[in-house]
Length: 261
Image (cartoon, rainbow, N blue to C red):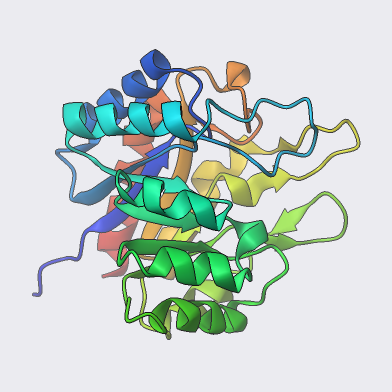
């Protein structure tokens, strides 16, 4: 029997709130998941430039944010993922990040994608809520045009009427045909985006069942936003998963994967 390919786990808070909290989360993930057969990647945003309301917390900004991510890399040894929103951010981010993420709302911005791809870093393409799984191959081709073939494609749900998302599990199989790891964003997929209140809602109680279903469908990895106290998180508190429960969830995902093998 061939050696089982490690499951990719991208986990961390939605946004960097402060150095202490972010390092606490990264250290917990390292200590609790490093013994499992997974490829662990820490994620956090230094700026959430696409918040619904102008009054929502965006993050510490690129300078302080990258300083914190750099410290986390040094202290934990984890690979780091963060997202960009403008071309001028690419060079600075590439000095710290191992994986550069293209946000869902920007997944068709050619200049941004190409500039990020030129760094030769792995590019995580968040599939926009308005993009079919088949059309992600054209986004990947923009990355490949630079000679960079290091690509993840992440499913984060599709618009289902107003202020709601749905996951079409066929998308995993469709996107895997392009030859890149396909990641399931189990937390953002459960958002109720851009609510009338100006704050996105969500249904975090469905993170576990959808994750296990995605594991059964054969997805290559999982993107999970976690926080010690989700109800107090400064971003995505309605979909963020409890940090203390992530090990149990990953163990169940591994069990499902073994079963389908």
